[in-house]
Image (tube, rainbow, N blue to C red; front, side):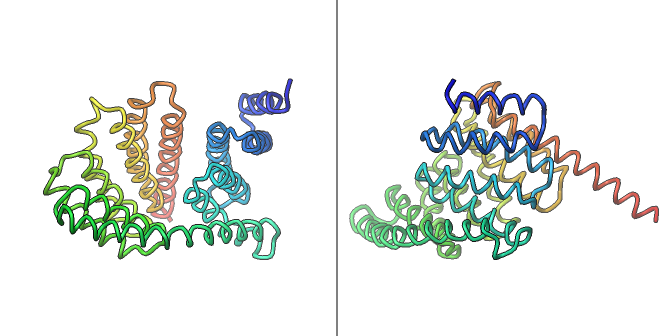
Length: 306
């Protein structure tokens, strides 16, 4: 039996025991082994499941949660998905600063990982922005302002600004692209929903949750019209609903969050099938949201009684 097979066996035994500490221990070892063997997809699935278990066991601000996030970031970096890597490193870093201290070795390592990727990204984004702006000018000259190709060029510009966290310019470019697509393709077209989702993502990252929820719901309403004939649209609707659930959870609106997680699970099951790990994750998150809602209600009742 190979080392990887042994780790799989130990990890599955930990899952059967439902032991968060053992799931963390062997899940991390298995995830790192899979990264070494370049089995990035399997590693991401394992660590994603571990993250859910550890979060449910200890809460979102626990050092073990940060440890799993860093390992997920390492996997995405190895896969070449630098934006997802930065996302996980960026979520782990403030937890480590608060719980371990700014001078802790783990905190320092995460900081260095972030710096290394961001330096690489910055050089790439600067070059990409120049190229996309040049492409946009050419599209204006060759096909005019109100053309799908011009909209595509604006989308690329907007997404680069988003990655650089220049949110106002991202919104400006994406809003122009959206106006073109609505005029050329119509409000209910799948490609129109793509831009609406991009705008929702920008508003979410910017912290404008009211706008983000408005645009995610708009995108979902379009995707649901196509979901019965397209597994892709079902998946994309589920992704939007999942992001809405996370926003509502951050706003401590747990009952609504549970509803969104459940709707997300429905769409993801339509896309991936009954055995979908992602759908199960959504249902687990919905259950947790219901528990938090009940806890919040009981706390409110106790305070009222006092």
